[in-house]
Length: 145
Image 1 (cartoon, one colour):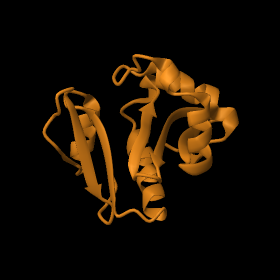
Image 2 (image 1 turned 135 degrees about the vertical axis):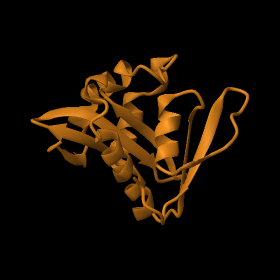
Image 3 (image 1 turned 120 degrees about the vertical axis):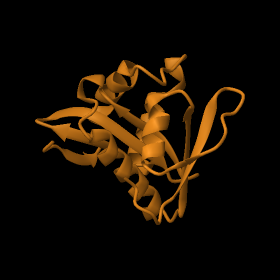
Image 4 (image 1 turned 90 degrees about the vertical axis):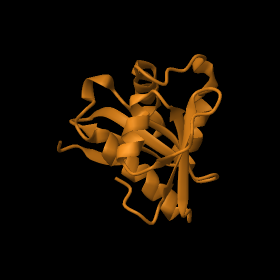
């Protein structure tokens, strides 16, 4: 792929919302729980990283510098399997390192494709909780990919 990773701007929010709504897993049961103000906060503070090729955004990631978590990693289903997620994930992890964090965490369903993605990237997962979520952790001094 010959796209670029860049910081999102507020004008990208509609496309980010489209991508978030198009996912096949980790579907929001209540889409109003992720607000435009959430996107704005992460654009200003996360930041949100986008993968762009030919002026088209096909995925995004964001990490939360307040608690060293990964807030988002979503790829337009039409662009899955091309390595875009790995690049965006690495950008989100670098943001946490730049914010001074030594370890990152995230959670996802133990039955999701995302769980397999994080395991393959070397993240260590907990036993599933009552909701079936695994908490993954990673030492950020190690390779992010």
